[in-house]
Length: 194
Picture 1 (spheres, rainbow, N blue to C red):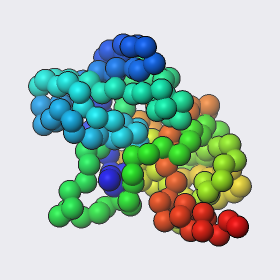
Picture 2 (cartoon, rainbow, N blue to C red):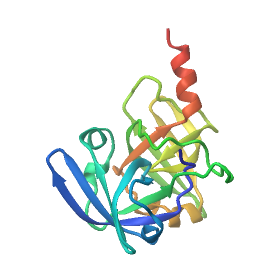
Picture 3 (cartoon, rainbow, N blue to C red):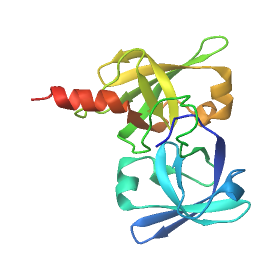
Picture 4 (tube, one colour):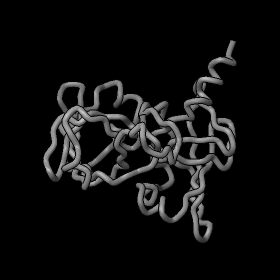
């Protein structure tokens, strides 16, 4: 379980294809604190540390992950949002995030609002994946509040701190992002479908 509060960046330094798997090595200030077998959210995707040293670590994405997320699009030098799993005795500053990406969306608009930014995203229709205004959404692992909600589209407002300390500052029109919809909302929506 995660909170959607990003701790650090990881820079992709190696990509190695191994049959249907992809081994990804990242350089990060968190590397020396990680352990083999530890779960870590990467742009909202929960991946397990399989190798580690003081400067970098490696995770493996299986075919299922590559099909349902934007992990397969990562390139050398990309900055990835990182969050370690939450501790049960700590504050929950974001919202409950599983690290299980529901689908990919694309950035369709970025508006500079003189002190903040508004990002709009569109996604393909899928059962149970809905947003509501003032509800929670996770974009590339970042816990956010939905500002505007439409069928299969939504926008979020980004403050300067979030803009600089997540990979939002690298988004352009067309950038693919990982979405995890609100956990409680998904279950309520599922219960309402006959």
